[in-house]
Length: 223
Picture 1 (cartoon, rainbow, N blue to C red):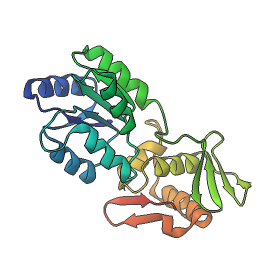
Picture 2 (cartoon, rainbow, N blue to C red):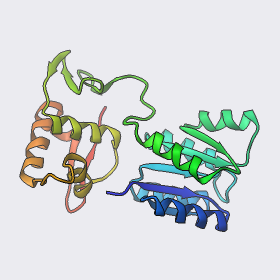
Picture 3 (cartoon, rainbow, N blue to C red):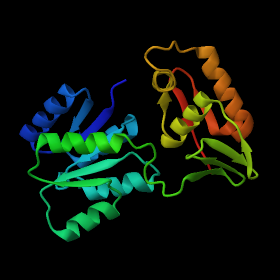
C-alpha cells in the first residue's frame, strides 16, 4: 500500500511540482493550500507523513501542528519553509516537527529525508516501553507485553498488529491497511486469522481498547 502524504503548500506551482515528483516516487499525495483545509484532511484521513509550509492562509503550519499534537496525533511532520531564523527553527521543533527544511531545497534531499523518517516505527514516544493501561505496557524493543510486570509472549503478527495500533491510536485503521501491514506481498492474508489475533489481544489488554467500526476497520485507544 502506498504511503500517504499530506502536503500543505500555498504556492500553486511548488505544490504541483512536489505532488508530481512525490507521486512519481510511489507516494499518494493529498495537496492542500491553507491551514484549515489541511486540518480537515488530517481528521478525515490517515496519513503517514505531513509536509507543511508555515506561512499559509487561515492557519499557519506551526499552529496547525501544535493543534494536531495536542490531540494526540503522532504522525511525523516536516516543515518546508523560507523562515530561516534560528527562532523559527526552534518554534518548529517545539510545535512537534521531526525535520525542518529551508527553502529552496533539492527534491532529492526532500525525498531522502522523507524516506529516512518513514523507516522509523514510533514517533514522539521517548520511551521504549509504552503504557497501555495502569498495569499493562508494551516493550517496543522486545515486542513483549507486560501485565503486572509479567511478560506475555505474542506471536510475530500479533506483535506487529499491536505496534500498528499503538502507532495509529485514536485513528481509524482500515481493514485493508491492517491486512497489508501484517502480510507480505507473497503471503495470503486471512480474515479469520486476523480476527483471532484481535481476539487474543483483547483478552490481554481489554476488549474496549480495540473497537470494531462496521465497514470501516478498527480504532485503538489507551489510558
